[in-house]
Amino acid sequence: MMDDFNEFLVKEFYNKIGMNKTIDSFPKIERAFHKFLRNYNFSRTISNGCNAGKIPAEVILERAAKNGMDFDTLLLWILALLNQLKGVDTNE
Image (tube, rainbow, N blue to C red):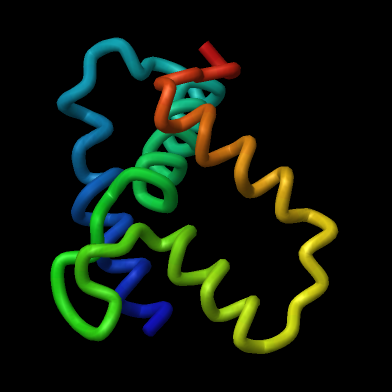
């Protein structure tokens, strides 16, 4: 599973860095990577499998609820999701 994710990151993020002329430093790579991960976790819809049609954050929260997780940090998840949906980028 992690190998698949690593391959995805290489294909969809790292291999495309050279095509983006605005990324010319490590801090810019880091900001772009955080933006990519926010999109991946909070906006991208899963296209196949048992979680098709959901976003990864939704799947994690559902699984946490089934496992009896303490939702003390739930507000942070919601805030992150709302910021992503509004297009807020605190790093740029």
